[in-house]
Length: 111
Image (cartoon, rainbow, N blue to C red; front, side):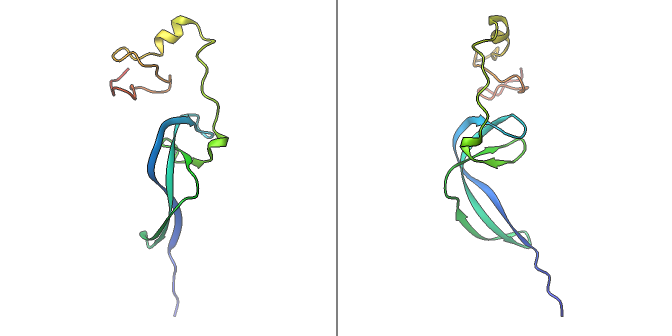
């Protein structure tokens, strides 16, 4: 008689504490500061959950969790010419927008 154990442990976002708190160390996109929980799954069904110890940064683009101390520094716009800074603003709500976005994260309009 053979028994197969199919299960695993994964991390899931429980609550977003601060949106856009840093940049991802893998892909460079914006990362959120989140509270997370660890989840034990058997046959892809959650069996046990427990909270993580301290908040982590989570990248929505590549799904990576990493400590806040590893975050990349924010992009610098103060040494960029005024013409480029004007192009980095949303034309609808005038908020500063990262160049890798195709939509404004503040108002949701396409750039």
